[in-house]
Picture 1 (cartoon, rainbow, N blue to C red):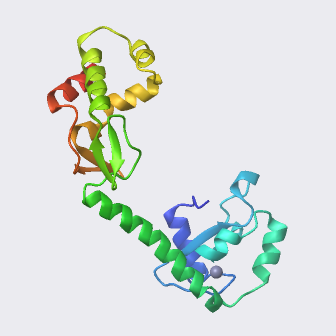
Picture 2 (cartoon, rainbow, N blue to C red):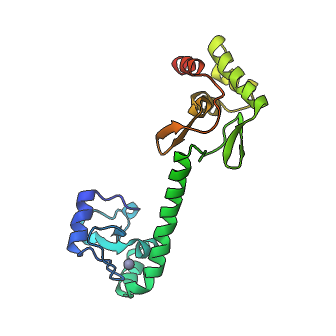
Picture 3 (spheres, protein in one colour):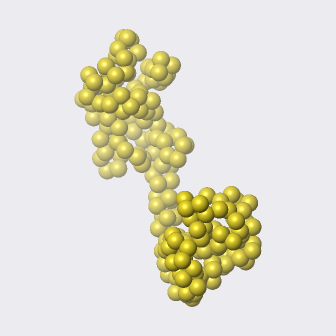
Length: 203
Ligand SMILES: [Zn+2]
């Protein structure tokens, strides 16, 4: 829960000398430090400077939500050194996960749910010919007839929103998407660009 503005965050970090007020962890560039609401925003805690305090991400994630417990928590100082081991693993886990996903993405491997028409083999999307044919039929039927999305969804035993997602899914063009970026994947396209483009228009 960290939704103070960057400007306010900088101000509080500066006031607190870029130092966690519980364990004394310091980082001059602010990385690993959070601005904590003593009285949480949801209980009408405001953005007053006195309601905000610098904590490292570890102390932050363990901080109690109510003020009374929090004041006790923060007055009980601990030595930041004993947290180093957690800080490192915490950092490397999140970094590792991100790096792993980014690497898969760069290699054109699939990182999200497997869409209809494919199955996952050795972390790669392989075309399921039977389902792929069904996907193409759905695209064509939507484009060439006047069937409504609801009817078409019912006919294929999926939800209307599921159908919309399917018709917009660029995976069928052989692309992979991750964190809003798109690249050409290793998997085969199921739907050709022209059909896909026409369906987007009609949608
Ligand atoms: Zn700390």
